[in-house]
Image (cartoon, rainbow, N blue to C red; front, side):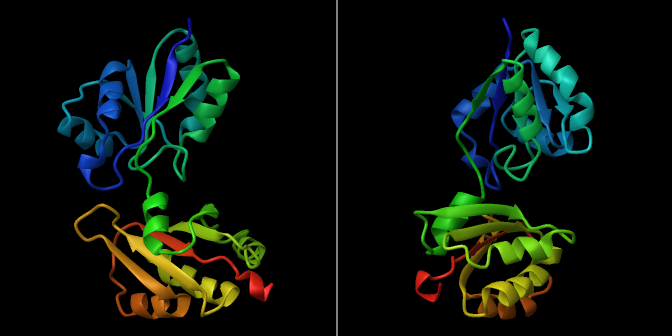
Length: 229
């Protein structure tokens, strides 16, 4: 009988967002596959979890996924976690889940923390229909991706790093318009959590005056108004 792969979300900031079930799963499995064992080690220590860890990240996943599937098929139970949030959402995880399903291994994904949903709801923009775009391409494909989204009517959600935030906001004003409504959330669930709302130009001006702002960012941009189509 094959084992099971558990996909376990971890807090995006506040450790109190860890679920009781997630803690129980991490304690019960044979091995935890972690994006960065140093980062996850702090989380595991906090919750007194002593399950062994193994690194699983974008630089080694293609090399080790075959052996991991073999171990799962042989009856071992693994938990997959990322540094923060839900694995496979702009983090490693898709390949392992896909290959496990192909091999007939049972996969169970726990509900839990992710940055995009709190940012969407907190933006005040329509949340009944939305599209998640993750990180925009840095160079190749960036222009075509933004062009393809110019007529998107649904609310759009993006992730961005601090050192690319200004460039991305400038690009968005160019492709979506300076008056397009938007919201930028950073450090979700942490002490310095902040959400900035307004037009893309207003938000760009705000962050241009605060170039040293740190944290992980979620950009929520209103879709194109149907009356302008």
